Image (cartoon, rainbow, N blue to C red; front, side):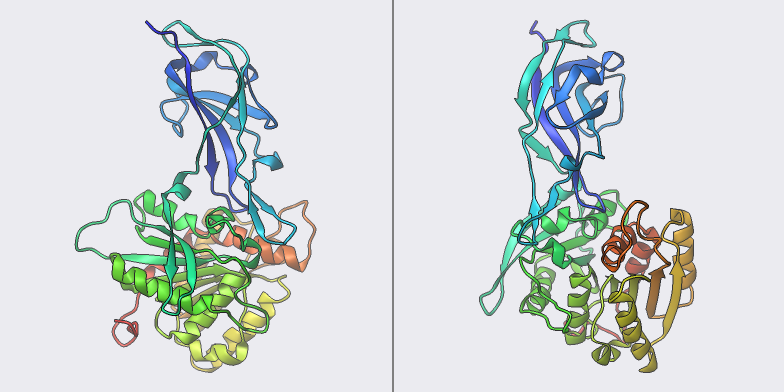
Length: 403
C-alpha cells in the first residue's frame, strides 16, 4: 500500500468589497488527514502568516474531522493577500503571486500513517470561486472597435425561459489592462453572480473592461458607451436574456456612463442602481420616467450635490422622487428595513445618502475622496437594494425600444 503524499496545492481567492484577496492555501493529500492532529505551526506559507489549519472534504468545504484537504487560512490583515494594487500609471494592477508552501513535520492521517514533510512547494493553481464562473471574450462593434468583457451565465438555464441581465460598469480607478479587473476590484459584478449560483435571482452578469477613462466631469463619454449598449444588444440575440429585465449598475465613472447610456437609449434599462456618481443636471430631466435608485455619501463633494440637483430637476419635470438618509453603520437588517420602507413609497426615482462619515471605517482619514470610494464598498452589501433592482421590469406603455 502506497504511503500518503501531497498531491496538489491551490490558492483560494474571494471577492471582497475592498478588492479580491487570497484567503487560504489548500493542500490536497492522497489520503484523508486527521483534522484533530493538525497544527498551523506545522506549516508555513512564505510571506503570508497562517491563522488556522483545518481538514475538509473539498477545497472550499467546511471543517471536518477527516478529509483529503488541509486549508491553511491566511491572515486577512496582511496587505500582501490583496490582489488589487494601484500602479504608478494610476491604473489597477492585478497581482497573482505563486505562493510557496512548506510542511515542516509529518502529519497524521486517518489511516494511522503519516504524510512526509516537504519544503517550498509552489501553489500551482488559483481558485477564485464565482469569479472563475465568468467567461472572458471580445466584442467587435459595427465600426470595428473592440471591447473586452466578462460574462456570467446562470448555472441552470431552463429551455424556453428567459433571464435578466445585470450590466456592471466599474470606476475610473479600476481601469486596467487586465480583463478580470472589473471582477476583482470589488463586488459590484460578483454579488449578482454569487446570488445566482445560490439559486437566488438567477441572471446573466456583464462586466465590460475599460482600459481608460470613459466618462468625465464635463459630462462627456467615449465610444465605449455606445459600444456597451451594442454589446448588450448582441448578447440579447445570443443568449436567453429577457429584454424587459436589462438592469444597470455602476460606481463613480460607471454610474456616469450609465446615465449617458440611459439618456441616449430611453426605456432600454428596466432599472438602474447608480452608486457614487453624478451627471449633467441640465440633461438628466429628460430621464424623469426612468427607474433609478441613487446611492451616495453625504460627504461626497461631487456626487452628493450634483446628483441631488439632477434628481430635483427630474422631479420638477414630472418624475416621482423619494429621499432618505441612513447610517451606513447600522446592521444589515436595519439597512434592509430602511430601504424597503423607502421602496414602499413607490417612487420611480429614489435617492439615498449615507449620513455624516458613517460610510468611512474607523481609522481612515475623513475626506471627500474616502466618502466617494467607501460608498460602493457598502452599497452592494445591502440586500434590499439588490431585491429592488430585480423587482423592476419594463411593462406595456414603457417597452424597450428594441422589442
